[in-house]
Length: 472
Image (cartoon, rainbow, N blue to C red; front, side):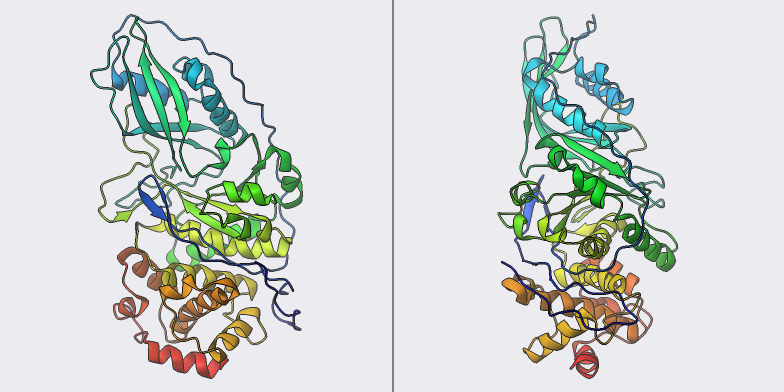
């Protein structure tokens, strides 16, 4: 599906809005490792500014060579086997890692390692999610589901000590793999089977290339390396802007790095982090990935998953931008202000699985509009001001989560009106950051949270009066 904005209106004080709108669609939540995540769908644009030139990393082709298996006289134990793998990952010692990998797993493990090196791996770790190696002896084998991830220039570090991480801990993003571990007659453990899990991760789909600026690691498929030269540096300014907003408002930025994958190939966009056949029509989406669990030999500076009940402290998020988000550098940079806000929010605090889309999408859209309009929310003549006016004329009211299930371009109203709730909150003296934080962490509505804050309570009636008088 496609949609267009009207031609840009004269805007002497605000960034130019592109004439072509990006398509936004609602999709259902999908499951990753038993935890739900909801892809983030957005539209918008803004002008580009000069940014640092990225440094491109070449990617070695994966090999299928059979690594040698190290000898030893000690009997196999699960803890020693896992600790050996984690030490090799922490030290980025390929030889030591592949000494524990047999021929049946070499292709998949080589592709993972090659791509992590392309992304700039400086450490990593794995943990067991399900299955056990206990009581495994010579000649035996066992199937495990593991979580595996690498520290790269896009891996953020926790900005402060909380109940869920220590300041400086790496919020490593882990993916799941199904592996088989076999014990040789001599008592040596080997990974002899390797399977990826759904949805497909970009690093498991083929060779990658990457570049990075101060705050953003940008990665593409090897065949789309030209995107690094054309767009690799365009995300640094919106990334710095998002981080600075959090620092100014809360005293610190919760994270300091982002990872973004770009593709202009519809088929590839439809495969990476498959969201049910809609990816190729999306501008972009943000996927929060799992943390590792505690494991023998794991680098202690990697944040692990504590028992937190319904709230989930994620590792870090991966942002994916497809063809609809690459129509111009202006569109990409505006989109980044939205998606990177989501990425910070997921790392900011534990988030309930049943989080409200009015709360989360409204917050990211509000942030994007401040980027698009130089710090003002939907000033006269801006694209979102026009959308809000049209939505009100079409009978839209206070936004609900169900509004995000609206088909086609009408979903733009769900985004614009949800953002307007934060715009209204600020006019009545509420702190938008604290409003978003408490609503996301508790699952309460914005109105309920507002009664806990300084300022006037946020009510649907008050919002209706304000939005009607401002945009009606």
